[in-house]
Length: 364
Image (cartoon, rainbow, N blue to C red; front, side, top):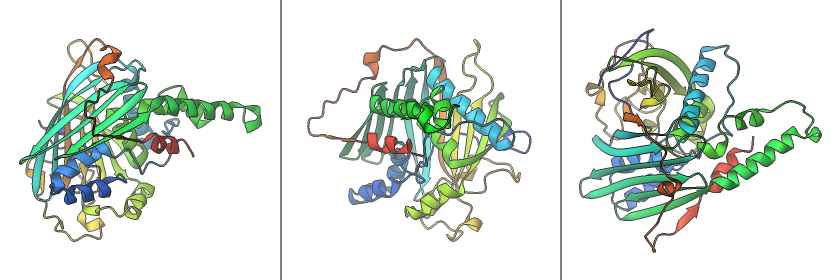
């Protein structure tokens, strides 16, 4: 698949999924993987699904009136989040590629989102890295979200109480709307609650794109994928986010410093698909701008031959580290709620409660 962009924008051939190094749990995940004798490549692939945006600054931002290219990009991204969370039910296939440690790992998966404001979704992806098997499963019935990860023989299970998040959020909205709060107009939190509240932004594609909106300075252009028009949202990690990455002790060579998100501008034969993400690409920080030497300390092979880029000044200058395709999208009838309930059958696996991580985001 080749992506060409107009207006000085250029997108590599396929989409790349977030490596996850920008999120705070990556170092922990990789350290655990090393102790288990797993490859850094496999752990890097898995981490972007596992880390629940621990470096997030606050609750989802509210789009301001369009006065700049960044505002236009943020508006488009927020509309994409709304389309995922509130639009028609759909499913899609996923293909992810990660380059790290001089190796390439490919994952294949499936995604289903019920939309309609239900908060229900299911994401599954599996990678076979030699004899080891890595997998990630995220599933939510709109009440509880579950994240199951497997690195080799190690299995972890996390749970998020969406009802509790919604309860706390609504309490904040009521408090902000109270005359005692000293304001007579809706605040940022109140405005956001009318669109996609925080509990709908947990997990799946919604959370990933929401994270991009919060952590990157974005701008938008136009392009094509397989001769179909797309909007191209390109971003560089914001200074506050980059500071958090450095403070967290991340391996900067593997941090997703630049991002490119392709959003469908045209639908299928019946018009479905407009506004849905079709590719996401992440790049490392350019060597000239980072303190790392030009040669990657991990010895990573530059996958540029796999994803040709033009030499425009606006094109990403870092090394391609993660690539995701979201393809074969189709509108479906919403599956019953039972389809999205986690049914654990592993008595030896206990879960951790990650609800607090998301509640902390609600505090300005």
